[in-house]
Length: 155
Length: 141
Image (cartoon, rainbow over all chains, first blue to last red; front, side, top):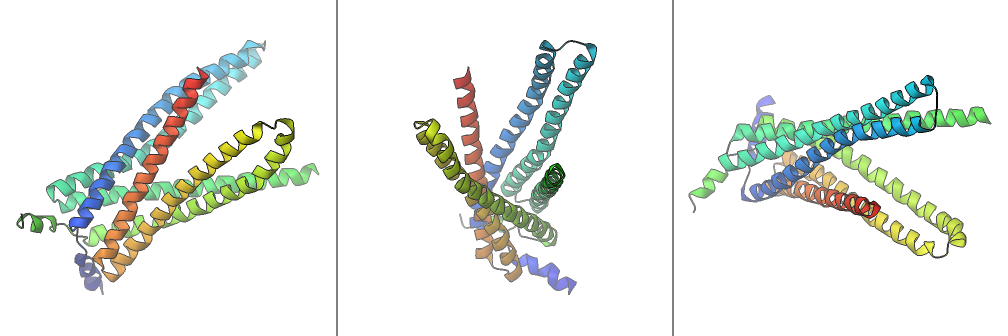
């Protein structure tokens, strides 16, 4: 059974048509990954500005050390949230970049190991995106549940 | 020239690659289904919300109806393009899986072609988003 499963994959090869498709896929994937890296960097930079702007705009009309601490805390919180978003976005871009670069190298040098490594990066990319999607859907579900409970209680 | 062709065929889908690709295909199917459902839901919301928005704001600002209409059309077209990308991802997962199951090179290649189109559409939509962001930044300043 195992040997049949092992040999069954060997009939599929990377033929001329596959190479054409994969070469173009690698090109677009690399471009997408680089744009993603740039956006991560921009989000990280903007996060510091937004935090500062929020803290200073909150302080402008309010007096008292308590309000000042709260505003500073709010600013730091916003910065942290944006930084977390930037970090969360970084990893899929990294996997996509690795997939593109390894695939390109594999196609150029006819390297089976590199091809398998690029497929692994692609797997990690889709797995990461899938798990992130599940987490976001769960958060939406919890949010809707809380909103529903609050609405029922307010009635 | 013919001597070059055998070099292209040295790479194949081995056991390691096949297992890895099977998992990638599974996750991509999940992502594409969630994407299609999400986009369908958003289009439904737009379909229901647009007449209400026009009825509410149309009386206050008659000239605003054209702007609302344009924005809605642009958003619907954008979501349809994203929906097309999700369908390509679903095709990639189905055709690649089928190609591996029945050991058909053509089906497998069609799956790879769908993946290429998915990345192409995703790049295009991101470039559009960037252009829109840059335009809004320029108009603000």
